[in-house]
Length: 162
Image (cartoon, rainbow, N blue to C red):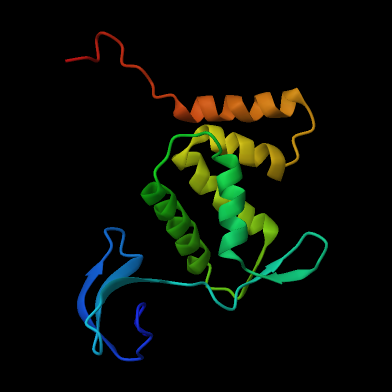
């Protein structure tokens, strides 16, 4: 790792810490020439993953493209950068669990929607309406009803309460 100040090629790791979700490692480094200290962040990167488009074209997986789509659905919604990074890591872990070198856009979209649904229901509806090409209000309303049914917990009757 090159020093961020003097560009010297030798730096030593002073401290390493694993993130709470276990998806990244923060390393504290020190330049052996000028003594400057800086931090680096190591994350798992999905390499050699091909996404097969609906029209049959193949494209390399792009984290940037995925995060832009997620950010569009989360526009003007309350969330922290840390929570967003955790969402991205969770999605990528789900992709890795498939243990395949290629995924269809449909499979990737379903993984995104599953994780968005538990992260932010409004963002999920936004994403699903574009991804699934909701054609009319009825389709939109049907998806909202499904969300409402899943979100409901049965209420206890007075005789069940103790």
